[in-house]
Image: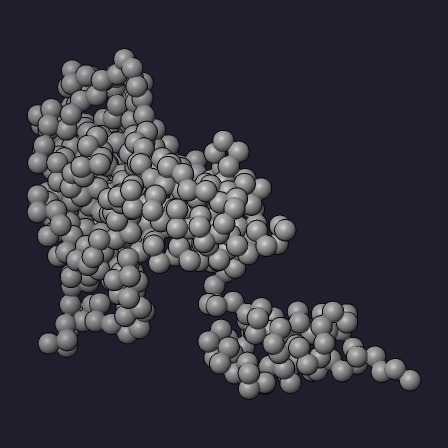
Length: 431
């Protein structure tokens, strides 16, 4: 008589209490591990898995961390990829987040034992990075920074803005609607492609809360165009709020046309708002830089409490500002010749059909539209794209001219072997 092997399927609690799973239960939680155990036991009952292979199968199926998010290799050729979380944190920022994850002195003065100023070190680092700013403050994203300004300064008043700068910032959100949601009224000036100082001057009055200059950071208008410089707007006698979007704090040689906070403040902007997770290379946050009294007014506004950043963001921001060059800026400064050498090495590791090619990368994330960055990539058949996205460590490239390009400008060199392993595994499956 033959015994049905499915009858040997172990009990759920027996598998969960296995010594081999003890560490996983501590690390991931009993509920998360139990879910995987149940799946493997179902496979055992179907006859797809032997009873003595249940525990090894559970171990192989458990996630490395208790999150549905997966680490991805960004080989798209876009330095700041919004769909991949924008700026990757530096190692220093990551380590700072781990420190901040536990109990910290975020609002405690350890010397006196009394409450201390929240995020003082991060704010000091930001002030040091932008000496032209009399005051600095941080909120939870770039849109929140502009919303706080509008909420504090403009309810029932007018905000003057050029028609060509009434931009949509992504996912259907629009700057005009954001400002109007705070109770402000928009006063549009100029046309879609051209605006003059006289247009602004005719629109400003005692009803004007501020002039808003928005950098159209995710598109570019060319041809018969004109705009008004911040220095000229500063002569109007009303506050000038400049939203630079991409978070560039100072001029960068590879991005000569990209506005930066220091230059705008020197030109006379009353306040500059920006994002922290783009060209700054830090965590998601919104930066407010400028007139000391105005920044303090914004910091003390009741709405500011709803936009407050947490201790993890403060830790990551401080480390980004004071630590080594973050990955985004490292990619921006990457040597194309070095990138091509890496691509050739990768192509050799993988073998045919991989080939090293020169490529053109982009900043992305609403920064430097139209600017191309010389880079290098590993070219593969386009048919491999989906399989590489499903690899144990997903590798995301982009299709160009019926080829899959794995661009290296945003890939740390330490991940080259990971990319090679993923490609070889996919090619082996294809064969």
